[in-house]
Length: 351
Image (tube, rainbow, N blue to C red; front, side, top):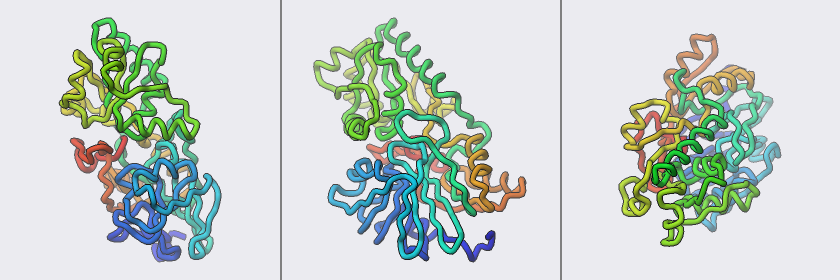
């Protein structure tokens, strides 16, 4: 089973490819058939002929690739056959519709995690470890320093900060990536504390989440009336791309915060130029990564997207067959501007 000649998923110049099935997983370029783990822009490349994603992820993916794109959605756990290869999608817990890709052929099973987290999240289905022979896992936060605190603790921090800002007459502004993280932040705030305004890029995905049955607060975009209601006492959720813009200045005076796993490192908060950092990630932390690898019972691990060298070396030292898989995933991007101030090896959309 550990023979490299047996592998179903291999890296190519277009991304991860299953030759037996003739499809790519999260390809970097347009292809004939793409299986997409989730709708963040660094995983959902437009221009392919056909897409396969989770059923609940179809409407999240559609605006990312093309409104007229041919997208097939299948329920979590449902199996479809592509050129003799069995393919099924399973919850990744990263954002609405995110999925791990399980492929099986001739008795061999391989799983590509895409981006995932093992922490609970009210806005999407919870992660499920899948038994397999080989696991290709993301390693965005693949260092022992990254260990996430319980979500309830972060919610208390955000709400306490909002209250303190109200007392000081400041608008509370949280920067969060428009798809996934922003909706998660909104699910954590105390809606009784005051008015909430979101950036237009956040609002459009809130509507997709709401249509899928996810309970997100009723929010409004920025208008003269809503700014008056929120200024000095309300909460604003916006992508980090608005930092320094005229749009943001309309809410002054304001306290600025950033919700990201990178806020675990103090220097990142300083570089972002914000007053407060909330350590909230939609990626797996170090503990979750190791627990996941063990739970899958895999014989080999492909480490991709992040601290791949560290993770591969650590696993090898533990007696686990592991290797690095190069990627063009750029990581924690601002989904609206396609730019990031994080180091390239630390970058993943909505970390």
